[in-house]
Amino acid sequence: MRFGNGASGIRRLVAAGAACAALMAAPASAQSEAETAQRPPIAAYQLDDAEMNAAIDKARRTLPRFVSIHQSRNEAPEDLEFLALVAAESAPGEFEYRWLTDVKLAPDAITGVFSEDGAPFAKGESYRAEPDMIADWMIKTESGAVIGGYTLRVLVSRSDAETQALHEGRFLD
Image (cartoon, rainbow, N blue to C red; front, side, top):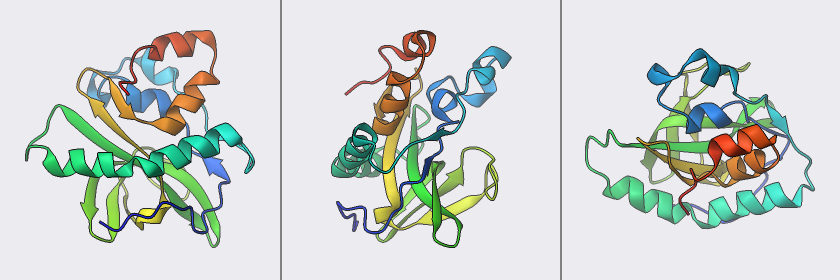
């Protein structure tokens, strides 16, 4: 895979954080109305947000771990879910970070489907991104534990005490 370490032109304008709780919660089929209602709103952050920029940098540095686990998994890994946060072009020259599920890796791209609706993207819509457009990655276990998810950790740390308690102990590394 050809994954670079730099941001090469990604404008950090908006991070789609609405999937934060949903992605870490039980599978969608098992989510209650209360869990669905706990999803945080979209989280905007500034270009000079040092903590968020450090999280994105860490995710990019550790991307080979995601790739390695993805490539070594069994053919039918029902116990692991692979997700990637990518900068998706929402308008010419404008990008929003959006989570992709059902992630597939190719030598020059990552593909998946959007995890949520949000104009101009539709939940379940296929998307292909270049490797340098990846801002974060996450591997979720069947029990809800998370490997990666560095930007998500920042969002959780900035949440209220109840949300922080809900996610306590879910991050494995």
